[in-house]
Length: 469
Ligand code: UDP
Image (cartoon, rainbow, N blue to C red):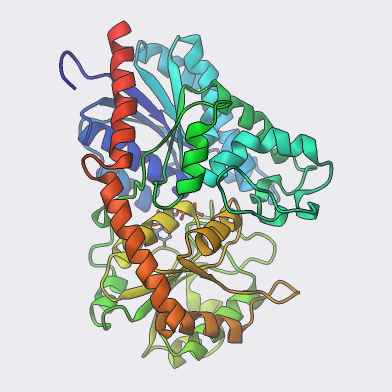
């Protein structure tokens, strides 16, 4: 920034690794790359987990950090949806936030993650403009902008919509693939999403973690749309491989010994859990594929595909206790299974990694693309099914695993998809496409690139805001 003190921006993030990681990366970038004065308010475990602490250590010293605790698990019942849990945690922090922001004011802008939109009126009380840092795709953002219209146009559940939904500039998506929290109008989270969708309109702008080459149609439509705040695609923002305590992890040493491009990495993110039957089929499918694999395996759960999201690490995490008998022994020459957490960015950046079976969490998606790794899309919850449609049918960088009518993907199908990704002609085509997107992502972020320019544009607005204070 040219003269005077740099504008002060306060960034507020919600709990859960899928939101914590991008908000920390975003706040760090504002300080490091744009030399803004930054206060980051992050929700973490109490105390923060090892993975959270490791990422926080990567923040520039200049960032002022305030940690708000997540609500404890005891405050929720087993059936509480993760989104509900996140919204309620953020709500419970608002009194503390109000007093903190009051002490920090005046400042140039508040930037909130999409689960923290209830903080916008708190900033408005202080006369401070708010921006959203949207941690998913432009397609999901477009859904948020059109949710009220969709809600009014159809009375039943979206899975029963007779026609696919066509969001402006986006690939058509079947109602059943719209984000999971809006699939049940009877659940209180549906009303919360509708309420939050309106809050977007109170923001001065929305920065979105996506880039031109990945979502050209959606971005064009969002730019042209006038019924919502301006949208700035500033991605892909992902963390550096060195920030996730990966150094020396056994899986990286194991990857060092595998041939280039030979390993399929399998992970369902920070929260994903398969049913026991599905976990078995996946194990048997991996074995049948005869491909090298690195699998971050979570304990199965029969009813909750996001069961690991807020789950504490425990002794039960030992994959030997829940994988098919003899599986680890039979596959030890070809594969490695690690419990709960791998240094994913370092894994995806490793030369041995040639494919990624992913739950399509948006961070995982971007991390795969930034490293030019082709994908098998295996969505579980949240907005992951929409992401899978975008990746397979629009960006054409992913294969799908088809489930049978009973919802189970069988071992033969899994082995087919993995073989196809790692050795087939289609795999080669996807690999070329993944590399194209990798290069386009790098261009978007470099000086003069579309995402870099969009970020500078917003920073310029904050600077002008500072000058009027
Ligand atoms: N992650 C990781 N190691 C793991 C699982 C997840 O480092 O074993 C990181 C991953 O790199 C990503 C984040 O956790 O940055 C997960 O975010 P995503 O949006 O992909 O999915 P979520 O976990 O929110 O469903």
